Length: 294
Image (cartoon, rainbow, N blue to C red; front, side, top):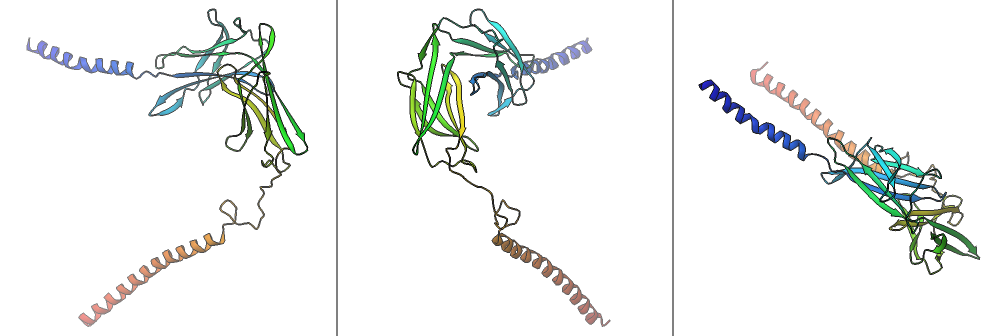
């Protein structure tokens, strides 16, 4: 009887640990973030880009190798693709002429990116509504004045209408980011004009890329037009062989002199310490001979 009581007490004492472990596993299930973006580039290629990530220790960590389904339509959805995320948690799909898209009465498309989840990751989805826009850009040079003209139109009920009141950014790609030249608000005719700066550096031939873009527009998404031409100042970033700098193979003279002095001081201290040890050893032997008259 006593053994049964002890056994029951042991079972009851161990049971809470299994319960807590199971509860802890349920709490640590990942809640992902699903984003969906639309891009129409200069070649009029339409691309859907979806991203799957989660947050840990205030860091955004990508989820790689996850299958995401892309849909079109609202009430009646149709699958247009199944894509898999890369090592950055990004998956892309190009909309071609064979892709069947469902539009509403105004001609807008509704896209949905949906992740079904698994045992360790919750499900998630993102939705955007995009209206197709035709963005045009023309670059003219009269005397020394460089002018950029942009025009945007949309199709509504089979008719072409100007995209009045929308903002188009004029950008020039630089090494780390895009340089903002101007923000243009389209007038009632759907067009706007800006003067391009004449003191902007280009490459060796003076070429640079001018970019007109709807950036994160709530109606059109990301739509851009670009053109490369000789509108920049000619620049030559090549360095002569005799030039000394931190980024060249030959270091500056001041650095060589400073390093030589520092190394001389360090090795001088080592040499001084070694000589001092030898002298101490010699003096100790001499005193021993004098004391014991060896």
